[in-house]
Image (tube, rainbow, N blue to C red; front, side):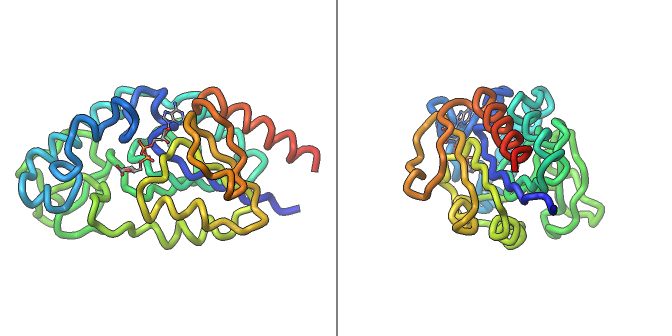
Length: 232
Ligand code: APR
């Protein structure tokens, strides 16, 4: 019997208990920074150094935290399901936990790319300064999708979600499109679950809500899914 396709749509909430701030919670990132000054293509044109410093700070934090129990529990699913992770996060915590099939919708903070060629991407764990150049001689920028920029991985992400048997939405406020639209793209017969301390009102979309934090609820949900798998 072919394995059921299980898709995870994750957001900043899954990394919160690792110590990475979310964007829109009480003390979230966007409480302390104006999105328009650090995370848009216009900000990059206006004050590239401020943008570089903002992402240097993000990169330092990612390099100093570890995957948590939620990231690790998800790895267990790969023994029983065809798991695809579609994450809005730019951290590498899913990778470091051991997940193997990850699509980053909004880029990856441990990669950098030429400001003139979005295909020229290199691994990069240091700060980026003005004057740091990509192999094509152009300024390096974080390999991150800024507001106002296209989301190149969206087409592939939609294809993945449209053919899933199970969808887990973990730690995202579903505020940012097109990513948020993915939670409505799964087949009508797919089983769908959401893990979040807050109620995002997806019940009418027949999501089963595991209300609580990722480290508390994701391991529980994983155990239930694996148990169900074994009983089928
Ligand atoms: N466990 C699970 N979920 C949590 C936890 C936790 N410990 N703490 C917070 N959450 C939930 C919040 O309730 C919220 O629904 O995580 C979600 C975080 O939402 P946002 O801060 O909006 O993060 P996210 O949805 O990933 O933002 C999407 O916005 O700024 C852009 O590009 C950025 O990828 C990001 C996108």
